[in-house]
Image 1 (cartoon, rainbow, N blue to C red):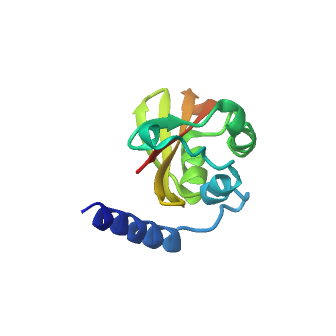
Image 2 (image 1 turned 45 degrees about the horizontal axis):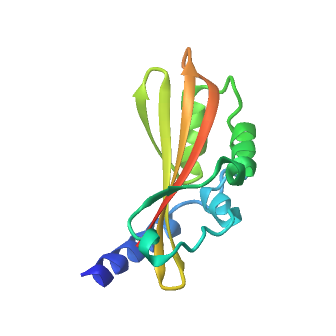
Length: 141
């Protein structure tokens, strides 16, 4: 059953990656940001399975800088959402002051499969971006 689920994940990722554009006109691509991340550590097997891990903020610094430059303060909600969606994310509103855009990817490392999630929170004031926060998490299976 586990192999069947992994096969479905790989198939869905392949379909999604072939239909998603490589990058926005400004060069933003979550696939590229993911590729540039350091490899997630191989944890001991008794710690590695099915535990949600977060990438340290220091490892996300360059990705955060890219996102801050592409979606600077003052960008309208609609424009920021369009930029992040073109880069491969799916966006949804949390409230009038927060929008979350998420990107999902699957990676293999040795015999492990990592489900990787990027969450970009757009903090809004008057329907414009006031700041951006970035979180990257992964679960090893």
